Length: 524
Image (tube, rainbow, N blue to C red):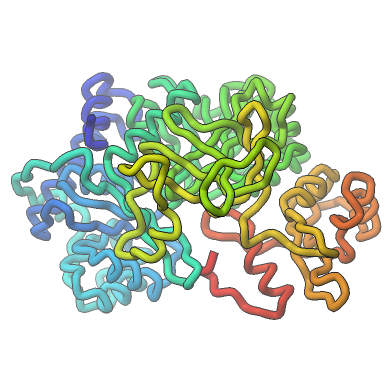
């Protein structure tokens, strides 16, 4: 099986002139991408003494240099980790020390924070800087410019095997410190092969991604495009939909990955231009299940596109997908196991439960992580003995039920379930009902401590512009669609809900607030 960097070489040899990446107003061909990755690898070794198995941390935004550094690090036999550019120096320092990074690659605009972090990380030998304008930034760690690094070449040692670690993806931890999810080349190939199979990915695809490359969903847009030789249009955010959506037409985009907050913005647009959607043949969603009302709205806006509702987590990349032809029948399902994997709903002992019973989703397959970097305790809680003595399976910590045909339905995080009036309430179920009310852009359900009820339910909502909805309208809507014990007793209106760097609503932070606690920003 291939090490992942070989896919770039293969795609460049098949079609060297095809555009690989569109970013920052520039277009980079596969031949150019391949050559730059070679030069980065040679420079990494020549300028920093980088060796097989060392870690290279990429503190960069969505740009072509990030993609080059990812594949260049792999070519040098190393392990890469992309860190969100909004990360503060203290957290970056933690990551650098946790993985004992040898090299930190950053950009001029982020250099002050990068140097503060690097100064606290003795393992970092060199900081590589993309761009100009930060020569006077104070710091003790030796630095080198991007162009100088590319000009400093040294021979590469053999890169290693497909069972070697390829990347660390840092994900939030319950202690407030992020955990490094360990993925081998083999893990990455398995995941990308499975996903591109059911998406029907091909070389003439054009994928528009606004998702951070630090987010595994965003990262895999790059990895999958390179695997099949497709084009990736890379943008930095979806903060201004009116700027991004016209690119669907101008770049003839065929694939558009979404997260629920993006979908909510799109379906609330009053001036969506049908021309934007004409070339799009598929939409994907992960991070959290899309409300059925949003799926229906997206199908109306993108009539020629297949909508793939999916469920995944960083520890296995993707777990399930719903074949688009099943959407009409099971709009609230996140589907079946992705090709080449198995999933089941289990009791506390890891044994399968009957259809319709709520339990924890367990995942088995070649895409399951190797564990958390230097965190045996957290690894043992998540990877447990499987059916066979030679394997560990992933316990997701998410509650699901499965119907008698094997389709999975997300119920909620174990920690999200609210006990109210003696009943277990899934916030997600109520939120899906809220999203079906026209004008609701964002919604979250929390439990407020109550001496009688245990927890009373509170809806926190964001309303679309120029829409008038009152609390009594929301409660009446819930009463028409939910059981009595699931109806919120209180509604709070806000202009925005707190979100993670990957666009997910920080439900745990809202719940902590309802209980009078403060949750650290990293604790989700």
